[in-house]
Image (tube, rainbow, N blue to C red):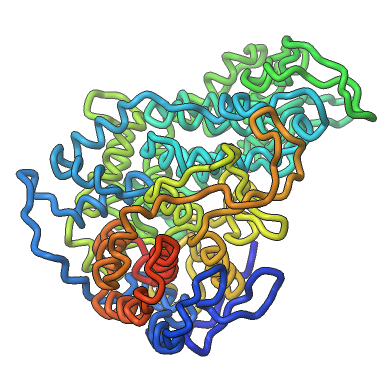
Length: 626
C-alpha cells in the first residue's frame, strides 16, 4: 500500500500560474497547456488561472469538511416534497454515481423513499459476464482471453460508467470492497469471466439477503481461487496436511464478525480488564477451516485443446458461471468446533457449510460490523454510533422479522437523518473523501459518456486508470481492499479527533498529482483507447489508439460564455450545491479571463467546459463529499 502521509500546505488557495503538472511522456508543461486546455493567445494565462487551484489539492487533509460556507444559488421554488435541488443532488450522490437533472427532478417529485424503492425494484441490467460474451471475448483463438485478466477492467468500468441501474451498481461497488476478491492473478481459466460472474453475483443479490449472498460468494470460483478454498483438502495425519485456513480466517475477520465483539452501535465491547473482547481464536479458525474442504472446479462442461502452445487442455467457458463443485472424498468428516458451535463428525459437506454460514450470519456482530462499513462506503467515513445502531437494527430486523434484508439495510443507510438531514452538514466529522473510482464513474454517468468503439478500453499505451488513480474496481492489492475501514490519516486534524477516513490511505504526493494529470488527459476530448495488447474481437476489429470514451457536454456548452453560470451548474451536478463562495468565485474568475469571442466555436466551448471541470473536480469542495 502506498504511503498515505503527505505534506499539507496551510493556506487555502495559491497562485496557480507558478504551478506545472507532468504531461504525456513526462514533459513539464504549464497546468493550462496540458491536453488542449490552453486559453487563446490573447488571454493572460497567469491572470486566467490565478487563485483557481487549491493549495496542492490536498488541503482537504486538514479539514474533512472542505471549504466553509456554501454557494448562494438562485431562488428556488420547492416542489410539494419540499426537497430542494441541492438536497436531491446530495441524496443522489450517496445513492448512485451521478445526479443528473432528470434524476433530481424525479427525487423532488416522488420524494426520497419512493424514488429509492423504485430504483431498487428495477430489473438488473446487462451483467458483466454477458457483456464480455457479447463483445466476443469468449473467442477461442488465443491464450490471451482464457489465461489473462486484462478484460476485467473493461467489463467493470463499463458497469460503473454506463450501466443504467446506477443504484444497484453503486451498491455492488460498495459490496465489492467488503467481500473483496481481486482479479490480479486468479489461477483460473477465463479469469475475466470469473471476475465478471463474481461482480454479477454482487449485482444480482445487492437487494436480496445477506445470508444468501454470503453463500454465493463462498462457493464462487473467484473467491475459491483468491482465498484458497478451491482445491482445499481434508486433513491427512500421515503427511501432516491440514485444511487451508485462509478463507476461514477472512470470512470471520472481514466478511462477517470482525476481530472484536461489538455493541449494536459498532463500538467495541470490553471485558473486566477494560480491553476489547476478541471474537474468535486460532482454534476457531482451525475448526471452521474443515468446513471449507472438498470444493473444486466444476468440470462438467468439458475441455478444449488450446490453440496456444504450450497449453493443452482448457476448461470450456460454461464453468465460469457455476459454483464450485463439492467432492465428498476431499471433505473433512472430523468433528468441527468453532464459535461455540459443534458440527458432529460425519456431517456431510453441504450441511456443514449450511451450519457454519448460519452460525456466522446469526452472530450479533454482523449487523453493526456490516452497517458501519456500508455507511462509510456510501455516506460518511466516521459515522456516529447512533447512525450505525439504526442501520444495524434494520439488518437485525427489517420490520417484518427478517434478518439480513439488504434492501432494508441500504434504505436505512441512505434515508437516515444523518444522510439527508441538514444537521450533519454542520459537523466537522461528517463526510468522506470521494474514492477515485467514484469520481471517474460520476463524470461518465453525469455527462453520459459513451465508448465510440464499444470496447471501454480505459487507458493508453503509457498509462491506465489503475496506475493514475491507485484504484480500479475489482483490482484491490489484497483482501484488505484499497483502504482499511479503521484508517486514520496520521498527522492531521482528523487524527487529533480519532476520526476514521479510509479513502485517505490512497492519498500522497504522487496520487494527488497523477489524479490531476489523469483529469487533464481526458476531460477535453475523452479517454483514449489502450494500445491493442489484446487481439481483435469480432466487436473490435481495429483497436487503434484514439479517442474512444467521450462525454456529452452539449448542455454545459450553453454556459461556456458565463463562468459563474457554468460553475453553478457544475456545483449542483457534482458538488450537490455545497461549493463555498470563495471556491466558486475563484473558479469563475479564472474562467471569465478566457476570451471565448476570439474563437467562438464548438471546440472552444468544449475546452471551456473542460477547464471548469478540471478546476471543480480538483477542488476540496468536490473531493470531500457531504
